[in-house]
Length: 273
Image 1 (spheres, rainbow, N blue to C red):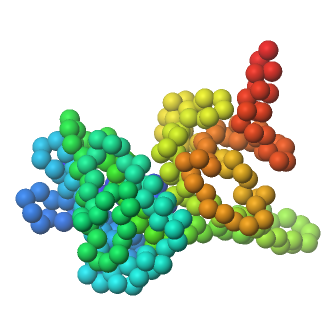
Image 2: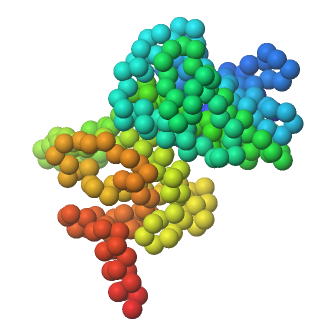
Image 3: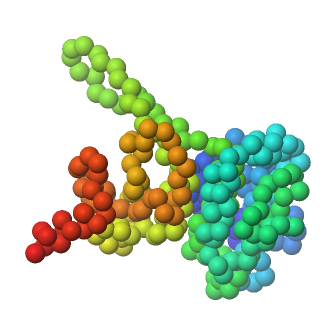
């Protein structure tokens, strides 16, 4: 049952959204479900996704806001147009065979305006809905993009460490340096991979097929390098980002400005000839 998959679900959601996730079994109703929220908010002060069985061969996900979510909703209402568009794109990336409804709103232009917001997703026709594989599929295909969309609207950022606490101690002077790295939004990466898949768009390698569970090593390449921007600009992950294997990504960046996708493909073809 879903309630017994709590640890599995938490792992999938934390890996998928890049945010700490909290969850609790909800035994109300005929069949137990799981209530899911962001770890730094309790279930009364932010968005909560409820996962339950649906019929005999499906899952139902309801997302709503806790009774004391006024502060978070006010924060969401300040979200930029870029954040709103990315949140909508994440929800739109959910497979077409999943039924999605935003109460009282059209799906393409939904918005969180107040605490009455409700989003429902129904996954049907799962042969074994209680198996790990089915639960993982629902997490990755449905709950992750929904929670990632909420994270984008709330404004969760990436925390980038600027010091190396594991650097070895050596004789001589101690030098301290700070590396400034332009922030890379993990939801951009998520949507890029959901749009293009985890197959390198240059060489065609799909690491998961080669390395199994150790194959989550696909990298996301900015077609216009972030480091070369004088001013940050909005990115559309569907058109501005592409997945590359680590080798091709390293090769692309052996030149400044980086090789284009077409240039690196030509180099590879020349070497084969």
